Image (cartoon, rainbow, N blue to C red; front, side, top):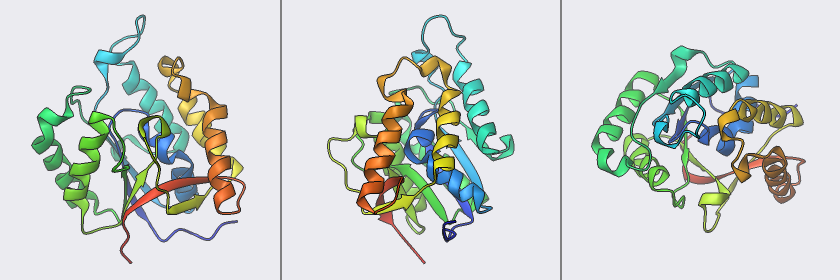
Amino acid sequence: MFKNLPYQTILALSPHTDDIEFGCGGTLARLIEQGAEIHTAVFSLCEQSVPEGYPDDVLLHEMRASAAVYGIPESQQHVYQYPVRRFSEHRQDILEEMVALRKSIQPDLVFTPATYDIHQDHEVISQESIRAFRFGSMLGYELPWNNLHSAAPCLITISQENLKKKSTALACYKSQGFRHYSQPEIFRAQATMRGLQNRSDLSEAFEVIRLIY
């Protein structure tokens, strides 16, 4: 049994529907085990990127199913519909949504894309979240396929059960199964490698943007 992490109200920011599951899904499972309240904010349902043969709103339903795996109620799932790959045109609106979340949720920890994530939408969410939540603790999650380098001074140990929950949640995104990085063996290998770095079986790695105690 791990010691409890010192956070009780968490907000995980997801540019697109499955980013937080990939980036911090095991850590979210660990936090939920210890009784933390998890809020998620998804900024695009990526209707323009839905594969042929699926309804335009398929990612909304897959995201809801994934959240149900973790036991996150719909009232704690915040969904916005900014156009995929065009977040830069809506920076001020996105910032104002985040400020509203900060005021209503008052999170003591925020997960956001790492500052070195090169995806254009992820970059906007990372930058605007620092503006919105700069007076609180923030960790940047890694998505290796979007990272030209990876600085990971924060390693959070997760259990086999935590990783299994992450895998089950990601399996809900059936429409995204064609993506090479969606295969379970890839994020298991990533967790194993990060575990090697802190002498644990499995870990997830984060950029420390700001830690406040």
